[in-house]
Structures are given as structure tokens and as C-alpha cells.
Image 1 (cartoon, protein in one colour):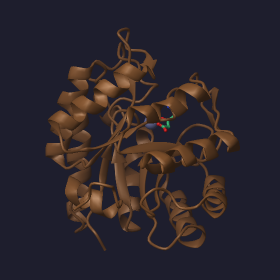
Image 2 (image 1 turned 180 degrees about the vertical axis):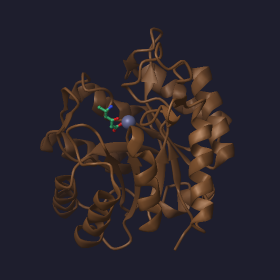
Image 3 (image 1 turned 90 degrees about the vertical axis):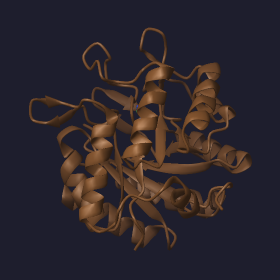
Image 4 (image 1 turned 90 degrees about the horizontal axis):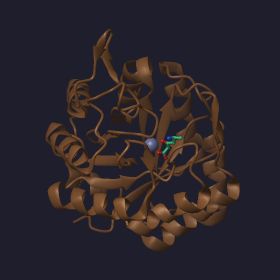
Length: 279
Ligand code: KMH
Ligand code: ZN
């Protein structure tokens, strides 16, 4: 069994900067968080950007600038979100790939998302998958519900493997409207990966809000990897706001070390995910 791949999702599209001042929203704040998180054990950064009013944006210039700045200042694998916010349209979400990240997210189906709907039509998913194949971008397939496993099996069957040939998925658990954020749900997803997806498929898992710890421990127990960050969790413990993303990465790295699967380096992560620049 390998060590643990830790992804940090520092910002997201939902958390309000006015309510959570530690949320990184400017490029300087993002780069600072990225450097600290790399130091703490992260190897992938899952990126959402904000505009000058700290609102979510898919502005192409900002996306390119962020990819360049993160590459200049860290060795992290840069994964852009194509999920954006629930208000983003398909064309803008597809255009994210023009910023030429190392990786990008690809959500495997529509899901209720609190009071909103996170829309991911089949044709849109196929379009994202194909464009990532063409652009040599490694996808991280985001699974918010068990049915998304079957959708991914169908996608790979019809459209072929992603660039590099390795399949990596992330379980996003505890979204109101999606799969629950508890240990037995992680078990169901892990069994689904073994049953429906190609041999060697790797998975990480993240739990929203108070689901973060049960999901983290269950994922480690199943040989899975971890995603943490303020996109998903803004309380470190009861009545204890997160002070920064590195605090969450440090805790994940400590849990991984206790599980005797310490955090892997960015170079090891590139190899694991068969990235184009892996040694
Ligand atoms: N913000 C959510 C609506 C992704 O980044 O690919 C979607 C999301 C998934 O965060
Ligand atoms: Zn995201």
C-alpha cells in the first residue's frame, strides 16, 4: 500500500469571506496558503478563484495567472475546478481547461446541493472528459452520490480511459442532497470503486463540515487518500474556527502518519497519477 496523497481545497465557491476571514481569496492569499500547505504535506491543490469582491469567478485571465503563480512558487499539482459555483454555465466551466492545469475536476452527475442544484448533464461530462483527454489534463472524478460510480463506469466504457490511463476519484460526502458523510458510506463507495472501476483506481475522500473526521479516518482505513481544506470545512473543532488551510493539512498528515501511510511528496503523487511530467 502506498503513502497518502493529500489534496487541499483551500477556497471553494460557497464559503463567504465576510464570515470566514481566514479564507484565501486573493492571489497572494492563495499562493501563501499553497506554500504552507505544501510544507504541511499536501501534493495537490484544488483551485477555485474569487473576484475583487471575493465572489466566485471563472475569469480566464485570473485562472491562467493562478496556474502560473502556483507553478512558480510551489511544486504542487495544480487542479482547477470545473465545477465552479452552482451559477456557472457549461461554456465557462469547459473553458477552465484553456488555462492548462495539470489536473481538473469532473463531477459525475447532477446532485441537489443544499437549496440549489449542481448541474452536470451527461453530454457535458463527456465533453469535459474528451477535452481533458485532448489537452493531456488528468481528471479527478468527483463523486457526490453512489450513482456517480455507475456513471463513471459508463463513461470509461464508452469514451475510454483518461489521459495517462490512471483513474483517480474523490468522494465528496455530506453535501445536503448527496451521499451521507459517515464511515459506512465511505465503505460503500470504496466497495463500489473495487466493483465498478478499473483495477488500480485510486480514491480520496472528503467530508463536509463535521463529516470531515469520520470520512478521513474511514478513507485511511480503506487504503484511500485524503482531501481537506476550507472549501469543505471551516471549523477545526466545536467552536474553534479553522485558522488556515495548513492547519487542516497538518491534521490530515498526522492522521496519515498514524495510519502508517505518511503523506507522499508531490513527485510521488505525479507518479501515482501518471502525470505527463512524472519522472
Ligand atoms: N462548488 C460546487 C458547486 C468541483 O470543484 O469540481 C462544485 C464543486 C465541485 O466544488
Ligand atoms: Zn471544488
